[in-house]
Length: 392
Image (cartoon, rainbow, N blue to C red):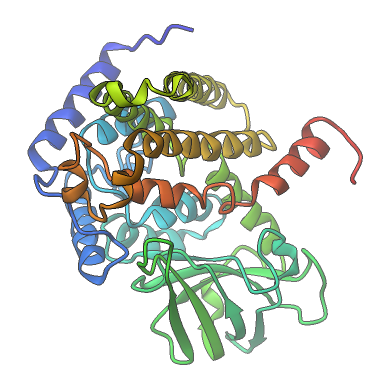
């Protein structure tokens, strides 16, 4: 497969490359899992928005550029190559926004999307509960309607970005007598509402990337419901499809990591070649990153012609999560014990020519097979919906 680009696409690539060269911070931002870093990344979202780069696939009237998926892939390639900051509002821009555009009212789109694109509202995800992780149909957190409000009681956990976020989108049981995927509603909740308690959850690196959220008689207007009451399951599945499919993890992310891995190997070849399997792992990581890229371009072209992405999103999720593990496990093997001594990007760059915080990436990669639906669940989906195998 040979990728060729139109003159318009080449000009688009040149435009974003130039803008990033002028605007990407010269000093790495603090982690957005710290309060200071969170605000730094919010400001970066605002800067992206000022150049109309925060949501390139959105319609122009919503602050985007109306780009197609190929242009989005080009944007992502340049973004990651420029070592631009991670997107603190990825839950909103890449997951909730496409869902809003499909299921939201015109009023909801006008209300939420521009503020989301500008970084004025940062969104957290409210799926998991203590008894409902990968099995979202087991959700028990209730949103009982009382007049023009829902009253929410219960708990969410592993809520990404919730410590300092402004809003949460989540799935709640609006019919208390319902079971499984019936009677669930998709509700947008401001996190400063009275009755909400947020408790940070530390990640492996010690920073609070997640939180558990407790709801005690929390009143949320019915107008904050997305889609019809009790029909939230289908909407949530659409959001999960965006998460597992193309938008959340672009191939450029892994291409850049694979290039950095190759560079790390070359700088440390005298040590790495003592174990021939390390060289093989580097080659496999690079090839897999390229293969994922080509497969994504093929999917994007099919979607542009009216196709759809369904259960195959699960194959994407398994592939990129396991690729991320391979890349970072291999890097840690190359670095050896010294790779475990650094905690911050600036320190990481000073360790034997490393140009990436491999330890932080390694720790985060461990979560890849779990979030967005565990890989075990994704294999069940592939078996049942793609291969037609019977349920176990």
